[in-house]
Image 1 (cartoon, helix red, strand yellow):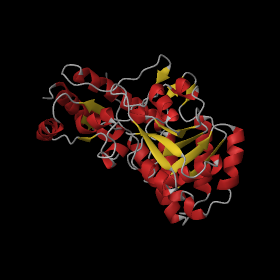
Image 2 (cartoon, rainbow, N blue to C red):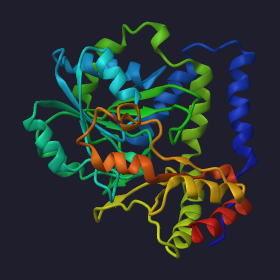
Image 3 (tube, helix red, strand yellow):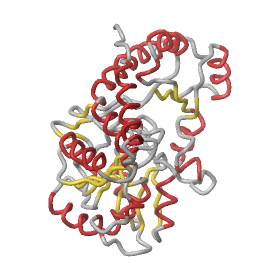
Image 4 (cartoon, helix red, strand yellow):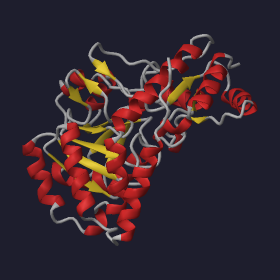
Amino acid sequence: MKIQPFSSTIRRKEMDAVLTCMVEEKIGPGESNLRLIQHVKEYFGVDGAVAFRSPSIALKYVLKALDLPKESQIMISALAPSWQIIAIEDLGYKALVLDVSPETSLVSPETVHEAIQNGGRLLILHETMGLIPNISAILELGIPIIEDISQSAGATLGEKKTGTFGVFSILGLEERDILTAGGGAVLMAPQRRDWLVLKKHTDIAPSTDILPDINCSLAFVQLKEHNRNEQIRKEMYEMYIRSLMQGKHRSFSQQGEYAVPVVYSFPVVLESGFKDVKQYAARKEIDITPAFENTVIALREEELENCKNAKSLLLRCALFPLYPRLGKNQSSKIAKVLATLP
């Protein structure tokens, strides 16, 4: 399959958007923030949204809107980003960390059900590596769900996009998220009744909590070009996965007939040691990283004895470069390496 070249026009749009803010001295929250929010509402089909300076701040407003009692247990994936457990504890709650399925890297309805029996009151559902969990089965458990779509923005389940299934959803805009503004997060409320509750709190938020225009401008361009970039990523992914199948390693797989994931990156679950594979890739001038180095399990590995699957993936899952600006020559080179990994 022919890989579409990444358009330099997109780079110019990103630069122009940021430079315009700087030249016009409109760096703080303002018109670009409002424009981003309007596009988010249209793209995801949600009733309301607010752009904050960080995912942690977004979570703070979620918990205000839900009026969740302090000391309540909030369930999170062991492969969720580490900011989740830090923010939960800083806000006066307890984190109940759940293990994941080794085939999907996602929490299962069965694991969530068991956690509810152990006192879980709220689930932050991290859609790891762009994959979609069994959301319908989890919703049937009757607990409030906050979707974290920082790696899955644009994925669909039936006719609905991720970000529209929970009470609220958080779209991170950090450096390693699928959409980035250099930092920040958009908090969304799919239903009007929930947006009205949230709006009471966000209307009085200090400007220091709200995402500045300079970041919003970059996020707006990224969201505008998201579908085009996703097509490029999908073409790279198909080439990569064909190469990977020639060897002994594997990647994660999406489950569910009506679920259409997005390509966040290219994780490889290794049968051999990470060190050997990293050295082999480095000799081919390809830099790989541990896929879950900035996650909850990486931060609290010694404490989470029950998260055996997550621990295993932490040690033997590598992330290979896959992003629209990579280019045809480099992506073809990576595909060849994937076919011959030790």
